[in-house]
Image 1 (cartoon, one colour):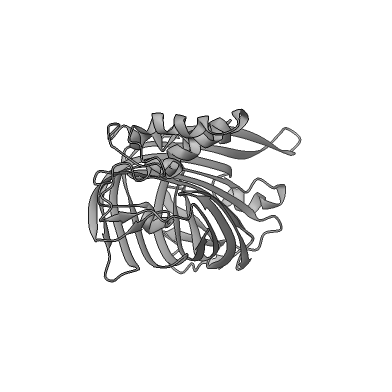
Image 2 (cartoon, one colour):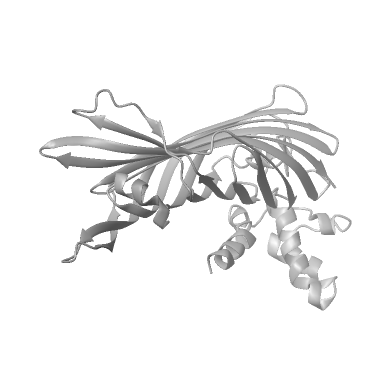
Length: 381
């Protein structure tokens, strides 16, 4: 159901650009020879009528995608390449780090028991294919871990939407204790027969208030090209969900270390306003920077807690408790940097981001850090 909703969202996202200026006189790529002005709906319908009946819906959407990205832009600042499709070879260096802590109180003495797991650093390789800013990519870790990364993207004249799904496994978490009486305690590595499994979903969307002169797509998928430097105020919405599983029976020691924590799921929604700037130092080059402080307005955590109790025959039995908690408002941030070079049909892009997410309940707290640096060689056709 989630994939179906996302598919419709990605399909209809370009319509947001139409609301900016439905009266713009625009030459559609499909109707370039006729040079008839009109709004995007009428142009899409006119283009579709020239095609076989079964293909008309497809061509209607195609014309909207082709036209909406440049419907309100200043062509002196932003250029749309003639080639509609693009394919990329990608490689990335990434790291996901999860710090989990549990508070213990024994005989009035409080201590904090920690578990740190990461997939640091991992080198991945993969490919991406897209049409006018709408694309799909898949990467697989080559060394340093066992993870995969799946990505979707949709970018238009004044908006950008990205979906990332990442997963990894950790077989050697680092354990630590801090508190009174544990001053000489050093961290240690604990090897697991069944690894901790971590899966994260990251969805973010942006709206550029200066879509006439500033292009988000020019920086992050090259479906448009920034010709003159420009900046824009940016509004953003971010959703993050992560699932951590260490529920194997062989991980009873690790579960006990974290006050019986067996499974953990947490979700966060954030909204923010920031600024982005595209700098064009020379023809073909682009340096894009974005910084956005964010307010986390939704913070939900679900935890499965195990408890081991002896019965009358001194046999141990396990009880499982589900706990959920809605957290308070919090602060987060989104930071991005991208450097791009375009020449003819080819382009080269390097891109980096960093995100951080916190969670907490009565007994457990934690923080997930996620960063990556991408390099992509693309070809338009």
